[in-house]
Length: 228
Figure 1: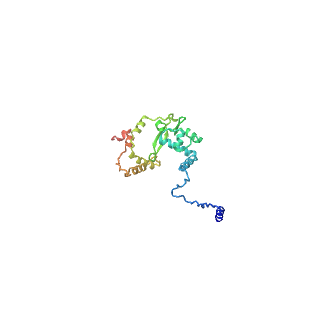
Figure 2: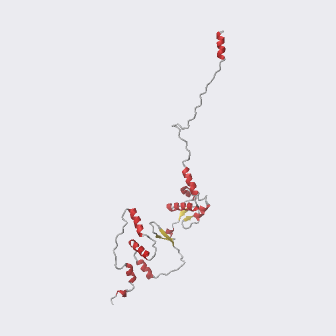
Figure 3: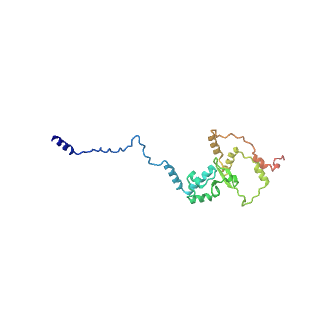
């Protein structure tokens, strides 16, 4: 009787399974878990491309011309896009600006290249007031005005020897008579001396009683130098 009661008591018991309480997630990643990447590694490059293509047409043209000038190579539109991010095919104004720029850009129907006009003899380059600066003048094969110069004047011009050390005096003479010289020899020498690490003080010049110019000018009047 006691065994029967114990069996009934055991069968009437309810089995309860306890689940562990959920653990709250930590707001900080563990040491072994890498932090998530919020931005792409190419974000800066994409931003640069966006800024270039949204820039004015003139700025994009300058960027392409600078590329052609520095490399002196021929580029297709796709190669220009890869090199400097200017979409030539996607911007009609940029394409037309390059194609219709006969002074600087050569276009053969497929590739763009820089036009070296000096080598072709299309322009004359004269040194400017700053180092490595030049003033370009067109070399017109059919001049509008025909000027005839006497051979004596041509010979006199070629006989004049204007050396670099004489340019400073020429500039002073031009300023004296109210004319602005196109060059600045003193400044050029100063910059060159700084680049070479030498003194920019010019060497003293010997003064001559008569200049070569005066001798050439008066050579056609021999009677002035004869004794009375």
